[in-house]
Length: 178
Image (cartoon, rainbow, N blue to C red; front, side, top):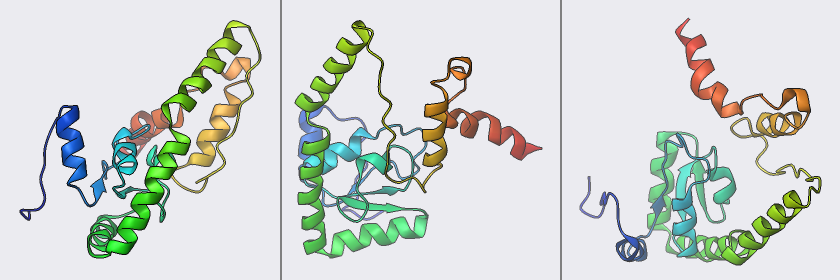
């Protein structure tokens, strides 16, 4: 590992901010295993650090591929993406600016809190919830199937269906052993 690469472990808030400010490329859990949202990608982006990671799970919604970072499918692509952003200062800067804007528009604390307040008020007032299908990145990581599953689970007799991740983590590996 090069001297410029550091594995920092768990950091407190000030340590994390300092470390991110000294970072040129943020690598957010490149295995993608277990990521449902990937807050680290958001933390990098809001501080103008482009993100490199895998093209799956929550990263499909927290990183805009080719705009706020680079999402990849293989170890070779991961390496190439990191090197590309380390070498290309203009691209790095453009993605950093876009990432900050993207996070502030989509994940602003006041917007998110207002959305939660509306949801909780509607539930309290027994208003029916409108399901909004997520309409981007359908072709990656079975997202199309996840959205269909989410919609089908609204039918009262099918509410018990597990999320697609349950099939991926528990059921499919058992069939692979056979």
